[in-house]
Image 1 (cartoon, rainbow, N blue to C red):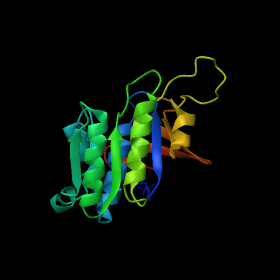
Image 2: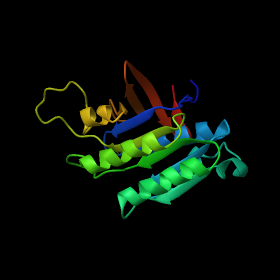
Image 3: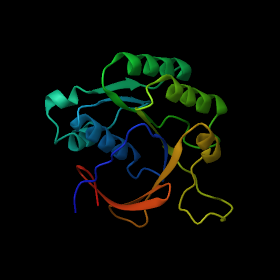
Length: 196
């Protein structure tokens, strides 16, 4: 059993998360993978990650490595925040990952102007940069879906060029399932990240 290495580059990912089961931790885990191989990460969120959790996930990186992690608060005018991310992505060297954690409201339909804004982000930065959006998934009230959660706005996100991933908890405890197009990964969430 080893720490999972997420080899990302150029994907645009919309990650729907079941409740509070590790979506931010998955984003931080992917960020450390990028930083460890020499890339930079831009992180935008209405709330900064918990300091303890951040420290656990970054514990294997040196202080010099951690300087490649750039965080900003995602509050106020969303289009303005996107403009800042575009400008920073295009001016800082070696940006490989842009994360918008909890980028939309926690429930209800994702507004089309927000989807258009994140699509503008992906179209305005280098195509080798991975954009990861995390949001709360919803429960399928109709009972027609075999999945634990449904990604809100999945079709609109696909049309905007995003792969739709889901992070689910199949049972109580540290086990998680990451559902990506054409595969499901069984993972274990530990203090320092995700393991297989």
